[in-house]
Length: 170
Image (cartoon, one colour):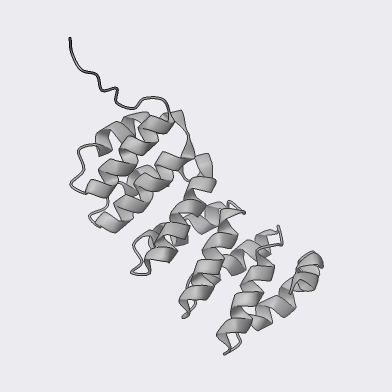
């Protein structure tokens, strides 16, 4: 698969063919190789692989998208935040954090989701982004009903140097 990935754009048709295989292992390796190709067609295939029936293939696609920020992938990654496959949700959160400012507005919107799992993933991604624009959003998330959202909000503020300082009064 690595040899195919080194072929770049020329490797996309055979890898695309492997994505239609009934063998989960072949699909996983195809996604792994596609993740090495920096081309919009490759990113489109990674987004499609986020909907594969096999969780390992979906997880591999999310890892691949972490290295290739793409606006077209945002909605699929945001959808994956609410997945019952919690590893996929975490990897999607990582990919959204890596997307940086490209995902900023979408993550802020996701923080208002009625689904706690989506809010948790969004808060985690925003906390890891290191973007100072997240400060008001993270402060607001300190009042969320989910303890994990609050945890990630605190973590993000701490990473930005705005954590709480505890001291004993004299």
